[in-house]
Amino acid sequence: MIFAAGETVRVKNAWPEASGPVHIRTPHYVRGVVGEVVRRLGEFPNPEELAFGRPAERLPLYHVRFRKDAIWPEPKPDDELLIEIFGHWLERP
Amino acid sequence: MDKEAKRAHHDLGGASKFMCELVDTRPHGLTDFDREVDALRQMLAAKKLMSVDELRRGIEAIPEAEYHRLSYYRRWIRSITDNLLRSGVITESELRAALEAS
Amino acid sequence: MNILETDGERLLSAVRSLLDKKGIVSTAEVQERMAVTDAASPGQGARMVARAWVDPVYRASMLEDGSKAAEALGIPMRGMPPLGVLENTAEVHNLVVCTLCSCYPRAVLGYPPFWYKSAAFRARAVRDPRSLLAAEWKTVIPESVKVRVVDSTADYRWMVLPARPSGTEGWDEARLAGIVREGDMIGVTVPRA
Image (tube, each protein chain N blue to C red):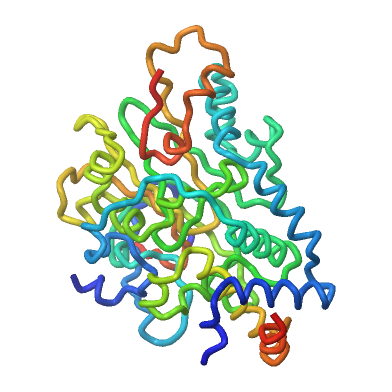
C-alpha cells in the first residue's frame, strides 16, 4: 500500500461492483493496468466508506501516470493519463 | 470490451456508447433551482449532514435511464432527498405531507 | 410511486421547507450560500494565472500548493478541497476531466460549465482528447506535444496553468488576466493575445 515516486504499480483488477452497492473511485478503464507513481498526494479518508456514512480510515492517495496505449489502442500512444488512486487499489506487478 | 461490460453506469471514461456524442459547448446559465440545490448541498456538507461522498453514492444509485434523463441538479436533489431519508434527518411521512401541502 | 421520482422542483421546495421548519438549514443560510458561491468565477483563476506569468516565485508556489497560492490572492479556500495546478509547457498539454461525476475547482473557478458535466465530455476526454479538442473547440495540439488527461477521481480539484501566449510581452497583470478564459484553465482551449 505504500509506494515511492517512480515505482511501477498495477491497479488491482478487482470488481467490487459485482457484489453489491459500493462507491468506487478507481475508474473501470484503468483496472488491471500498469502505471508509474508520480507522487504521493497525502492521506485522505476512504471514500468507499464515507459514501455509506461509515467510519473511514485515512489512506494514502497517489497520482499515478499511465501511457495511453496501456489502456486504449488509439493513436498517440505517448499521450498519458494521470489519475488519483488510493494505495489499497495498487499492487506491485 | 470486457472492462466496459463490468463498469458501473456512472463510470463513463471511454464508454463506447458516448464516443460519437457531440458536446454541447454553448454556455448554459444556471437557473434559480440549480443554484438553490447547489447551495443546499453545501450547507448540508458544512453542517456534516451529508458528505460529498454520500451525494455521489446517491447519484450513482439512480437507475441508468433516469441518470441520463435527469438534468445535473435534478440528480443532486434526488440524491440529497435519498440521503436525508436514509439518515433520518427527514422522514418519508413528513416529506409526503410537505409535498401535499405545496 | 417511489418518492424519489417526484419532480425535482417539488422535492427541493418540500425539503427546504422541512429543513427550515426543523431549524436544520434556514432559508437565510441557503440565500447567503448562494451569494457566496456566485462570487467565485473564472476571473479568480485568471488572476492566479496572470500572477504566475509575471512572477516566477508565485508560479512555483502555485504548482507546489495551489490552495495556498489562491489564498495569497484573497480567494477563500478554508474548508475547501485541496487545489492542484498542472502547468502547460512546450512538451505537455494538460486536460482536466472528472469521468465519474463532475469534480471541479469550484472555490476558485465557480460553477463548472454545462459541457464539463456532460456524458459526452466525460466519456471522450480520456479516450480521444485530441479529436475532442479539435472537433468541439478547434484546439489543435501539435503532434510534438504530449496530451496528459487528468481524471479527478479523489480529493484534489485540478486546474491548468496555461502557457503564456506570445505577443503579450510587457503586458500588466490585469491585461494578462483579461485573456485567460474558463476553458484555458480546464485545458480545452489555449489563451491567445
